[in-house]
Length: 243
Image 1 (tube, rainbow, N blue to C red):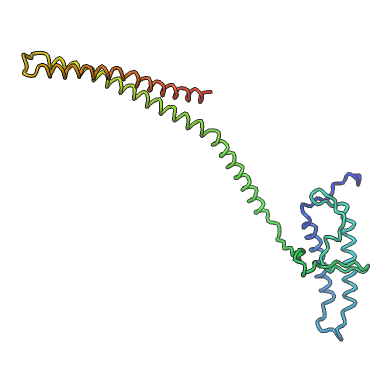
Image 2 (cartoon, rainbow, N blue to C red; image 1 turned 60 degrees about the vertical axis):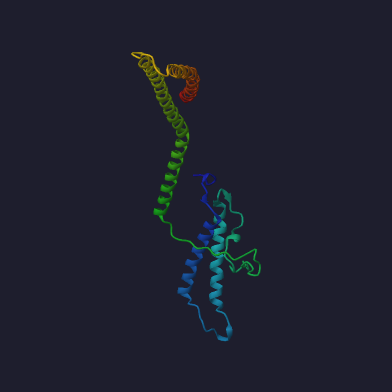
């Protein structure tokens, strides 16, 4: 396949490249320590020049390897332009390249230490499961937001209609009962009665009772009109729900 069509190695964050460099340096340091164990008691404070030279050559190799690999890497879709910015502090090479650690006296540039753990596929699966559960809950909440207002208004309309029907029936029954009781009471008062001692008072009270029934019949339409308006409001709500 043509080299120009090769897909680059995609890294997500700069810490991924730092992690790779640190692991290569750790493996190289282990090999150097195995071949050239560090000497604690050096004569006259002199450093182990052979070991230092080997470390510089190994660092040269690491720097050259990642420098050649940089054009084939991307971090979050962006090319890697300066590989030395990913090297750890005090990285010495034979060519004199040295990286310095951030100053501890400057609070704006604290030294950052990275810690990594092995990749755990179970945690990734758990994250995917939690994301799926979150999406299901969001869909359920959205469905409830769509259904709850309509269902509530429908139940209120049904309850209002039933209440209005019951009130209508009770009002009609009360009206009929009052008429029947008034007629029966008047009939019992007049039938089989002779001259009474308080004939005038009784007749006056009877007239008042008849007038009270008349006023009641007059007020009944107003109460019925209120009931009809309430029924119309309930019907409007039910009609809007149907739309």
